[in-house]
Image (tube, rainbow, N blue to C red; front, side, top):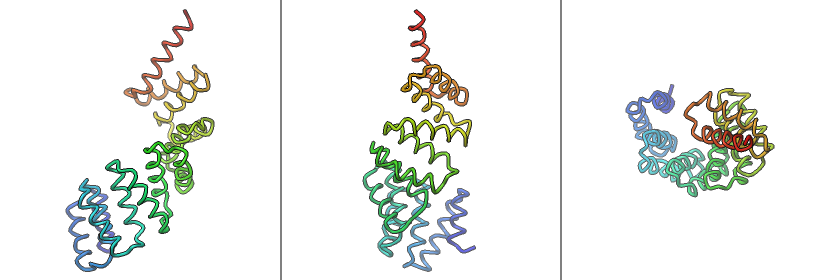
Length: 222
């Protein structure tokens, strides 16, 4: 196992000092290789040291203007700080340079979603879901963008698929409850909110949704 790979293993294990030591050795031995800088940048990201992480990612792009993963790292760095415009630009740059992984499509989709560009986010989240069909988180956020773009029928089917993958996904049940309200299916909405609360008793949105429906049903009975 080379030092870069071992450093990544240390980072995944939370052994940040050991990882930093190895990545530093890699950079000292190969100062013109962007890989060491990218890995060190990712480590600093994990440590929430955004200022220094940006320097390492930027240095990697100076060494290799086609280092797609460096731009992806910058995208993540800006996203973590809610700087969505520069995050979007860097994710797009990574894709232009040939990074074809579910994560970059997913993160670009989330970046657009956070800018309330729901329709624009859809093709990226869909592509992410195609590349990682077993990832329930990606599928859920694709469903969320569908709902936010008023594609309720497709959103409903997507949330149902999420529950098929994970029957304990409280947020999927909550969103199905909201869609049921739009469909004027009050009983269905109540059932979905109850399911969300069974899984997550402190789900405030589901609790509020249930409260509103119970009050509505009381009004009807008067």
